[in-house]
Length: 271
Ligand SMILES: [Zn+2]
Image (cartoon, rainbow, N blue to C red; front, side, top):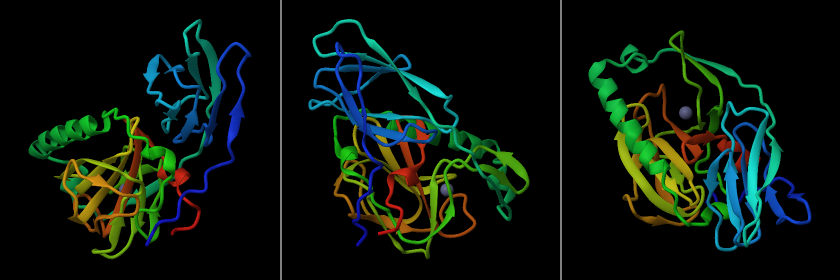
């Protein structure tokens, strides 16, 4: 069983001017990072001009992409209204690896026109699933490793496939034999199940407030779209479907359309 929960970073308390509501959160504001926090119920938050969902008990989450700049501005309107307070958040910069992968079939590195049409349609379906803005609060309960195995790829690496630069790697790869169980990293609802050109057989789980996890290259998918899943529940098995050089799980984490670093939310040691 893989049930151990993430040991979250030390909680940081952010105190705002007396007139405004206090926010608290855990996690570190860094490129690829996710902050999970709580505000006074009824607080309204805007991150860089975009409304952030605040739960009935004040729960909220903020994500920062791989290439986020050094600062983010959070506008905080206290319960009952009034002038928003502008809170500047320093977003730590990170260095990224370069990963060379060779031996991929050329048609998977440079897809033909037919494949490109398929890829475009699949991207739209994936984006729609990740755009879900549900009131679920499962993201507040921590995340566990979805599979055991060797880490064969990390978030943020610049990818060079068969010698050609491609977009960065936006997930965590766990290599293990085909058939190795894959578990839900947290409770949630299956928002997408499919068989995609790059990701192969995949699942996306919605954990609420735009927080999603992606499980790709699966050999088996055990849960249908719409199903509720428990934390640690088996949802599929590791495989080698899609664009791969061997069996592994590609595990992705996103906040709406922004891919984040899943490893920052996981315990240091695999369950
Ligand atoms: Zn991957």
